[in-house]
Amino acid sequence: MTDERRTHSTISKLGVEELVAELLKRGVTYEQISERLSTEHSLDISKSAVGRFAKTLNRKYAHLERMKMAAEGIAATMKDSEGNLDTRMSDTLIATTQYALLDRVTDEDATHKEIAGLVMAASQTVRAKSTLESLKATERQRFARAWDLVIQESRQLLSQSDIWPEVEAILLKGREQAVPDE
Image 1: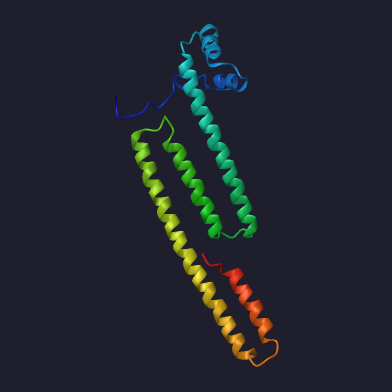
Image 2: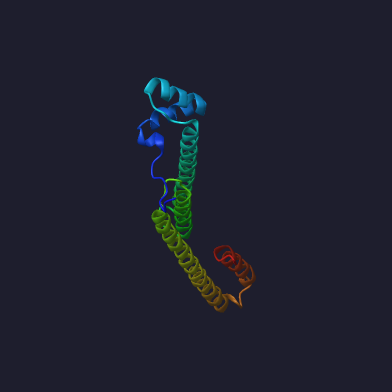
């Protein structure tokens, strides 16, 4: 057994991917596809080869569906953040990258060298996620300091006023909403 995985399916090598994909889409069985390729195209393709191709095709369709969902998530995040790249956008992009890497690593056509490269890329996304979490913590601390400063200055200005208890309650609630504890 070699160190490299098979890079192309029998069906791909013979150039009948579109035909087989269409037949699978119509619900034709693996055995019927194998027979049809033999009688109509003089190709000797086993039903197992058709099954492996179908499995790969289904995995690719599932990957496309995940990518579509991730793209919809990115679009929703962009609308929420008015087009500015924020930590929610970065979270979505990192997750999308991780899904794509995982999908490629599990692809039967990937070689060991490609998988090693993908594992390295996956480790970089983990580092990116760690860096992002650190940035989020720093950002939360910065917001908390800003809110604390506003509350402190407001207290100095309004502490003798009758409205201070109401203002303080509003400011504390605003701080709580702007800087949630995690």
